[in-house]
Image (cartoon, rainbow, N blue to C red; front, top):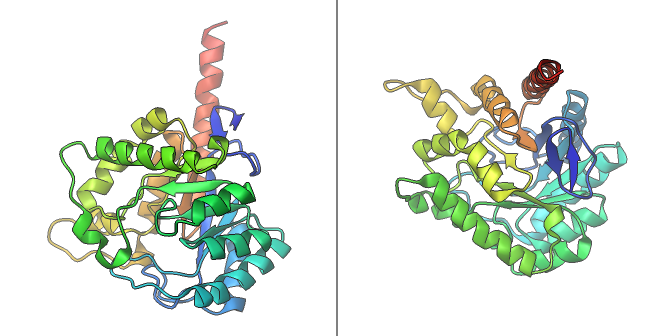
Length: 297
């Protein structure tokens, strides 16, 4: 791992001196966040390039919806959706990650130039994933996951210490991934906001981001963008949650909180506000550091 002015990133990716911003391209017809706006290959590529131009440091391309209740697509369809987009974006100079739970898709995406595998199941959905990523030698995101989208809401059962439970389950998964051959220096951890969690669980995890980062001692990806818990916060007790596309300001607020707690990256659907937020956090950190140094002279 490389230490970047107080931040640590996984081996094999560019170095950023602040919290990185990962833009999202969903090549799906049924995403909760955009309703299939980028399902066409050409539109998905255009969107990825727009995100990079708006300040995304890397772009996460996924072809399978993981919204609550979503059913799985087959492997051939996922490959058809994802690989042309990965190839075109890499050709356009974009650092690309692939959002997949399938080893075959991860392997094809890496061959097409993807630099990171972002598996929301942390390798649990496909037993071939960990060996494939270990062989490819690319960074790997291990997210907290309790099961597929079709029934994950029923798994949102925790005791009073949600952060502690998530930490324990992540440690078990990280041990298994390292035991399967993936270099610990290439790992990124994700607390899995919205996956088998209700709004209170998600808020507890956002409040506990500092604890998660300190105790796991790994680069952390925070993916809060447009999620249900933000809709619940914005709605208040007596109103309906706003549509997903009206939650970007709230997303940027979480991006700032995550950056302040030392997150390696935030994953967002609209880049500009979060890119601005993490740069402000970096400037405040620099000012604080300079003031502390001056006080010590």
